[in-house]
Image 1 (cartoon, rainbow, N blue to C red):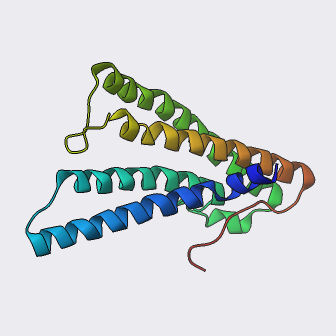
Image 2: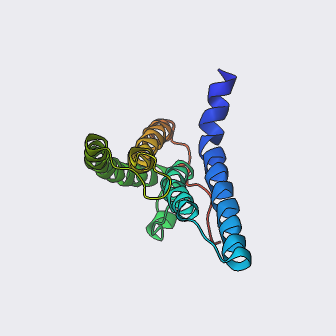
Length: 170
């Protein structure tokens, strides 16, 4: 049970760190190869590209979890706990619907790639592994939105202040 709580708390953090380190190391190796040896590889560019794609989608889920995604919250300063919670729930509901639609349509690309057996140019690995970044990202976003709904409905029921996440600028 303790392990699952830790995974829930830190999963995006560790995944982001893994993909970021992979991106930076591969990019550094490719720059050295290009500048020192006048040689570059196509696989390095692919690793960087696909690491960045996974970074973006996992980062989006992390932003939803921490309520760190971009929003205009000027109105929020003038609302009490109950209307604020209702507004957050409404915003999360809209995002939830969009994420469900996007998840559904993102699988089409993955299925087409699997059907035709497309592979990457340099690595010669099935593109399915890289195209899965979008459905994985939206699945994580939906999971974090469900957690947000539970937290906000509890806040609404108890009348406690709603979780607003950390402010980027104060």
